[in-house]
Image: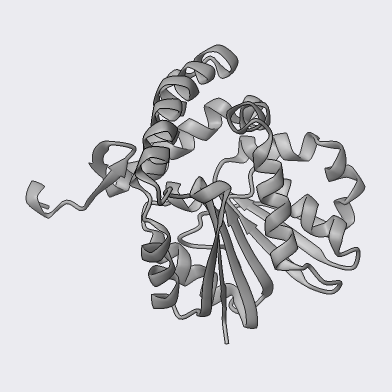
Length: 250
């Protein structure tokens, strides 16, 4: 293959070969796995818990549903889903095994073990049959996927007719002054926090950069529609620091 023919993508603000990105992302989350939950609390001041609760409020889990939580890491979304729907089941799928291992160590994992499975898998090539889940969620993970369009297509494939996708992801603030202040915090505080708490400044520098490379709310909603979903809507959280996107496989 000529160098000009190689497909490239972004890894934070770097341009890398598409074939390399998954391994680079895997490295990031392998390195931070044992401090991931602590860092989430510190970076957001605990607000990420409110965002995830807001996700469950809109999702309204029901008994009998089967959830697939992709890039589910340490299980935050699956645990919330199962607590709200005692008769439901969930599968946590993540490409980084060490993240899943950390999730299985949590107290909730043992209590919910009969309704919860942990699977190593790639969002762009899910190891599940067609039309096997009622709900697909991905939280703070889709911006790390090499080809977002492929992940959305896979979400559509594994959902049953009538199934729902919900994505929680960092997004863009509509107010330029607020975005400026948020950028100052993100680029100056979060990598330093990563260095002190997780002993890994570079991984958190990448995570901050990856947020800035992710499409804005309207652009991402259009991508979800293009994948085949209908009734696509979004809600801003904390003025747009994060956003929830919802769509249905009709």
